[in-house]
Length: 155
Image 1 (spheres, rainbow, N blue to C red):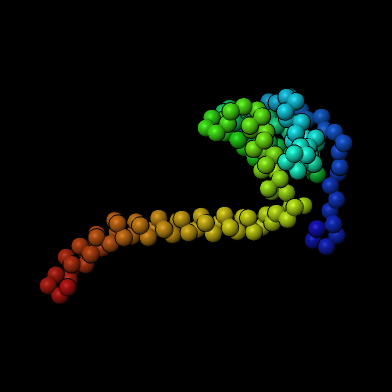
Image 2 (tube, rainbow, N blue to C red):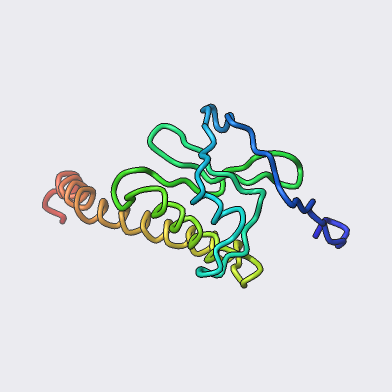
């Protein structure tokens, strides 16, 4: 919805010819051409994913980046998979990305605003806990010593 309440329709593409190299966040990424990647663009009925040709999978230094060609013609990062632990090859990574896309599909009821709010609440709780640990573990003994020194016998 735009500011006037009218629905904003996106361009629908039957196919998208993604560039071989893509500059994103100051890095040059290289498109991955593999039949397994078709599960992202053409769909994977076993996982309930219909596919979206606007997605492209690119390789960067030590990671694979899933990007999407948005309605304004700009490629934006959707997900990043760091190569290494838990990733055994293209099939495993693409399967994880398809599962991520299914889980975060707004047509299936995913609420991005609630997701962001939950993430921020968890982060704030972690920061508060770290602060409480700092106060209890490091600051309180120093403050106790300083008050005892300043007040002396009155404490």
